Figure 1 (spheres, rainbow, N blue to C red):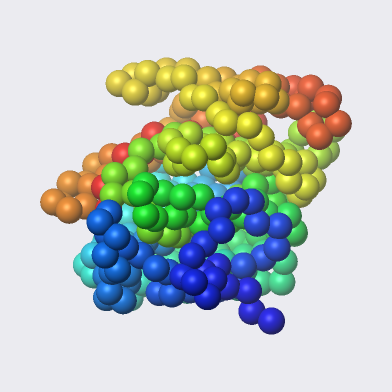
Figure 2: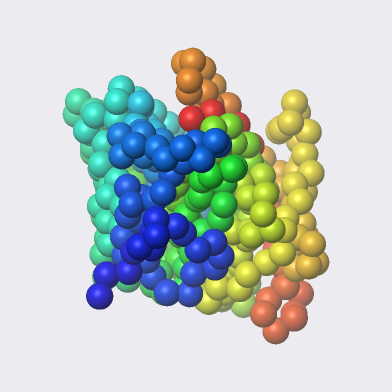
Amino acid sequence: MTTRLINERGQVAPGILKAPVDHINYLDYDLRTVMDRRRSRFARHWRFNQFQFVSVMAPGWVFGLALVDLKLVGNGFFYLYDFESGLMLERSLLQPLARNVTLEPYPEHGNAFFRKGPTELAIQPSAGGRNVSVSAPDGIRIDLEFRDDRDPLRLVSPAGYNGWVFTRKSAGLPVDGEIRWGNQVWRCDETSRAAIDWSCGFMRRETAWNWASISGVLPDGRSVGLNLAAGVNETGLTENALWFDGVCTRLAPARFLFDRYRPDTEWRVTTEDGRVDLRFVPAGVRKEKLNIGVLASNFRQFAGTFEGTVVDSEGRSIPVAGLRGLMEDHFARW
């Protein structure tokens, strides 16, 4: 039986979802104006946004890749930051009207593709995870397999007056594969871990958020994953979660402390339940400013190092020392 997000009345049920959602049937949503007038199917199509972001974190490097469908434009980008050399390698492409951009509305088993000229990006389902691939000029070949994606966080939250956002997130996943960029190669090993962010919805016209992500291995050998966000939800629901060896535990709201105009200085992020208290020192940054009228983005995503403590599900305080991860400060108008 196929599980759909939108019910027969055209509504969603906000909250944490324990079971998988097979189909985001967004065209069935009863989208209305702020004056309660029903929006057309055409309007529902054009107001729906969708993106996927995947990352791999290792002691020596961090990799990120995104596929974005905003209907008026599609975006595909990927980057690698090498901590030893300080090298930031990146590619970013836009497709007007999201031509040759496909993000299927199936969170558990959907395909996602971005194509422009000789460059192809793909995120495809596999048994228990995702396969990520890139083929691009200048000798860029990327093949990664994310595994053991057994306990994701699934959440539906209201957005603005009449919208909603669905997200499915996992972190701390085992990963195999390699990244070839010209004559350089970065290979995954037993210390590498990955994260997946699958999100969509009728989002607020203007949205701003901070976000933190960790995927790594603790000194005791356990895999650890962390996802924290603030600014995405204004309704008390959060997408904050901590994973130990693939098991998800929800966290309280998060607070990000940083200087937006000196973002290369130290950040701090904590949760209200006291289970996360981390400092973050940025090293490299992938940033982009885009202002094309109805669409705008001020995006800064930092690769760096986390220090501090997290508390596991048994109440034990776990030191975090030298784990690589990401911090983000983002404004979007879409």
